[in-house]
Amino acid sequence: MDARRVLIVDDDPDIVVYLTSFLEDNGYETRAAADGADALAVVAEFRPDAVLTDVLLPGRSGLDLLVTLRHDRRTADLAVVVMTGMDQVLQDDGHSYLTSHADIRGPDAVIGKPIDPHDLLEVLERVCALSPVPAR
Amino acid sequence: MTERYRQYFEEMPCYLSVHDPSFRIIDGNQRFRQDFGERVGDFCYRVYKGRDEVCDNCPVAATFATGESHASEQTLINLRGEQMPVMVHTTPVRNDGGEVVAVMEMHTDIRVAKRLQDQLRRSQEKLSQLFEEVPCYISVQGPDRVILHANRKFRETFGPALGEHCYRVYKHRDEQCLYCPSQQAFKDGSVQRHEEVVTSAWGEKINVLCTTAPIRNAAGETEAVIEMSTDITEIRKLQSQLTSIGLLVGSISHGIKGLLTGLDGGIYMVNSGFEKNRPERVTQGWEMVQRNVERIRSMVLDILYYAKDRELEVADIDAGKLAAEITESFQKRATDQSVELSLALDGDVRLVPGDAKAVRAMLVNLIENSLDACRADGHKPAHRVRFAVRRSPPWMEFEVEDNGIGMDQETREKIFSLFFSSKGISGTGLGLFISNKIADKHGGGIEVDSEPGRGTRFVVRLPLEARPSTHPEPVPPADAVATH
Image 1 (cartoon, rainbow over the protein chains, first blue to last red):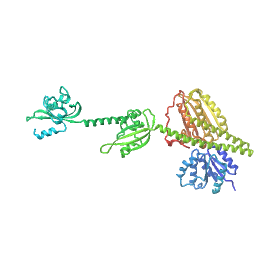
Image 2 (image 1 turned 45 degrees about the vertical axis):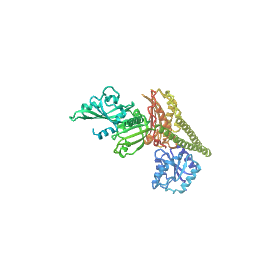
Image 3 (image 1 turned 90 degrees about the vertical axis):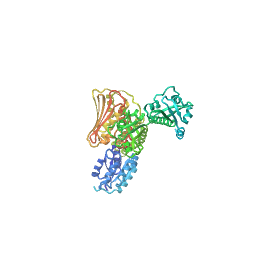
């Protein structure tokens, strides 16, 4: 079976390097995007099993990216894991933002920063197992 | 006089006296005798006022002269020496030929009315004093929004406002405000409460809590509106500071979590590099550790600067030398990032007055921002940051220009707000806020020009002649502070 693919969306290059190396060391194939617009382009071409996105990005936010993916029939079921250091944002602004899009499914998982590597592997394994294998 | 009329005359509850043309009293009723004595035959001015000659404006003399009734207010002195304010009415007494042969004078005791009048005057004075001295801005406005009355505090703060439109006086506007509580009070007679930011005669912004209420006439129609505004600027400042502290705590926590993730990444790369015997990974990881430690240091300094709102220590700064030092200190980082960092010094760059530490912190922050913007931009083959210093009287200009990721308009408008960060996890949201504050404290400013994908240009202008900040500390509304 092919390696599972994860798209990492973060504007901090250090975090991208870290997650890319860590996930590849653990058998994942990865690609990275620095913002939401980049991420959408990579999703179309790379067809990942899961998107691992930061919330605060330049331009459109990670939550905005989630809403866009969910509204597109082709990516609506794609597993999306949100990672953030600002838990409060997710609880307050994030919650009300997602509530205003009540028609969509929220993130498949939320991971706090700093990231616990074991948690991350567990979460990715779980969401990728549930996620339908994209046609490539 | 028939006996019955005589009885009426006697019993009248006022002083009645009849006077001949020489001002002698020829008759008087019971109350007259009771309070002024058996004085028939004596001159009225002597009886009523203790005078030796006819009074000025004597109503009896006027009635003799005109044959008409007269009314006036007088003060009499009774037998006991008490002063009695009275209302005097005179009427002519004519003979069969129609000649005025005598004048009847009626004095009504108005002591009670007078007392009430005095009380009324005193209350009016007290009310007026209260209106004047209330430590709030009070004005009364007519239906056309023209100020009819204003109290002392109002006049002292907004100028002699009578006859002016409220929107001109309060907000220096030429037209009515979008929402006018005064108009609402005229419309439905309701009491309105709301918060406003108004401007004093000398341009100071004042946060006020404003209450308006209708003033109705006897028919219940609203004739005017009274507006009372309380200065809550200090409260808003405190509230804003408290909000800032709350946000600061959140921002610090957010920033630290991001930096810890970066440090974790560095440590992972170093450890896994050793395990896998990949020296390039160790090097990369160690750089990540160094970079994130540097970021923590920078963040702590930002927080310290923010926490301690110190006064500037102004001295002459050698702008060229400072710029060269800063550029030198960033060269290694720029090279590591494959960014070409250059410095252009105008030949005429010399001294500029300023706080060396603060100006240095501000310029370091702008260059860090530019390097971050280049690092976040993966679309261009080569990146550059150009630092230029030039003398452009009355300013010394410091320009930092990059061809990094750039900013959209929304970001551009928010960058100087506290805790706004376009850098996601890596920004603390303090840097540009503090930089702007430093420039402002020097009496200068920062201009930004940016376009997404093209890059950003910051121009800091510091006055060549030392001068204090021209901008009063603004108090942003609670919802104006960006949190991400």
